[in-house]
Length: 124
Image 1: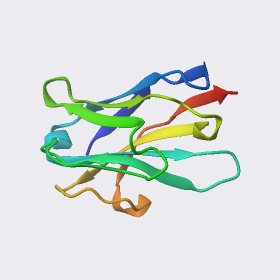
Image 2: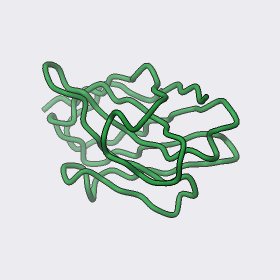
Image 3: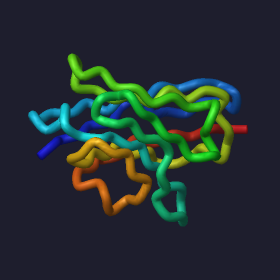
Image 4: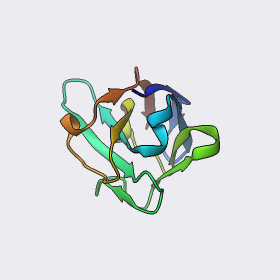
């Protein structure tokens, strides 16, 4: 079991940056692939980025490729999402998720552990 707590959300203007953090507790963190998802008002929760348990592999949604970077620090049990060149359409609640296993998967139901979410609002 992995417990996840996100932080770092806020209100920014278009073009600015934010870094989200996801602090994990539980021994399973080191064996978990991690993902970031987001949910905009009235929309489904969508995959944003994922990182394998070894941090050797990453994968991004097309909408954020080249602007967002996912990373993890095993010593700190933390996963990060660096978001640059933010756009109003990036506005959403961002969720951190963990799944036992090495592979990055983009489907929501593959992840068994979720954080409470952090709001990101980008104004134009």
